[in-house]
Amino acid sequence: MLAPPCPSEPDRVTPRDNTRNGARPLGALLALSAALALGGCLALAPGPKDTPRPTPRPIKPVYTPSVEAQTLTKYYADLEQDLLTRGLLRTDGGGPETPYDAEDLAERFETLAFYDEYASATDGGAGGMGRWEQPVRLVPIFGPSVTKAQAEKDRATLTAYAARLARITGHPVTVGTSGNFTVLFAGVDDADFVEDKVRRLLPNLSDSDVALFATPPRKFYCLVFAGGPQRDPLNYSRGVALIRAEQPDLMRESCIHEEIAQGLGLRNDSPKARPSIFNDDDEFARLTSHDEKLLQILYDRRLRVGMSAPEAKPIVERIAQEVMGDLSL
Image 1: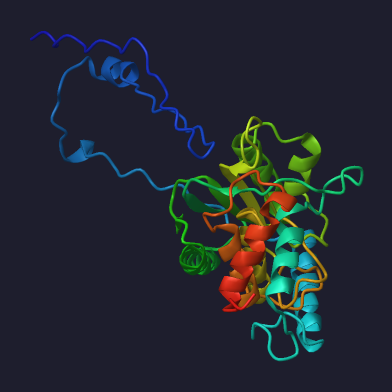
Image 2: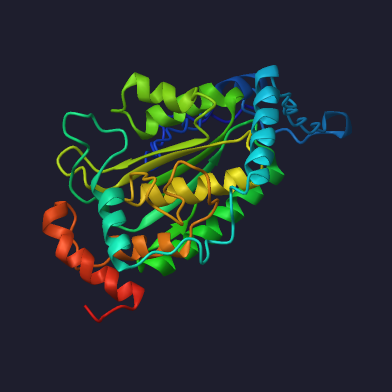
């Protein structure tokens, strides 16, 4: 009996290119010739001795933290304890000792929304107001050093925070598996992983900025990049944040709160902002009611992307009075 004709080889297998998150998955490869050649293209029913054995699953290597990672973990644990001992990383949102009024709020909004803490001294950091006009879709991505349990905890924190931001701003902010604002949870041992992700997500980022993401100094607990295309940079369309994985729980949560909020458009810090997370003194760990009001102002539809500080000032002052409940002026 003659063997049936062998099926023909495919002319070409084209990889599927999914670039929404900057990822470029490998295409599936179809291999027929070797198996068919060995079997002569005959469909033979396997006997008892021919029953194929199941292919064993590859064993995932167990991650062992490097000495540097262990040192950083201890450093951040000691730092968090020191901050708490000194009454910092507060979670109470402020009280009678941190008063502010509508005028304070308007002044702080101008500093946080129209100035950039990393801008050159020649322009004073002044610029137009930036924010997201399109929905914000947060995507958590975890480096190989992050355990499954920790990843689940971080994802839950991010999801709850996104829902809070959506309520505050009236702007869509969600968490999913694909989107436009990537939140990388990664440690020092994940440097290659982070560099690859950032280069894919932000292909025009300079080598020095990519290195800052991949191997940040230990004084940088977290960082964020957000902005729009070159032709319209203040109309935000892409964000990438890094949350260092060696940090203990409260510092991680504090990083999530500050970096995502700054990535929404409050891009500066100020020592006058109090009670606030937009302050380098680490007094508050979580978004405060003061900060919520700043975000309400930022996403008020009476303000427009690209407005200058002088142009926006009278509108900001009016909105600040409204959110403070002070309409007497």
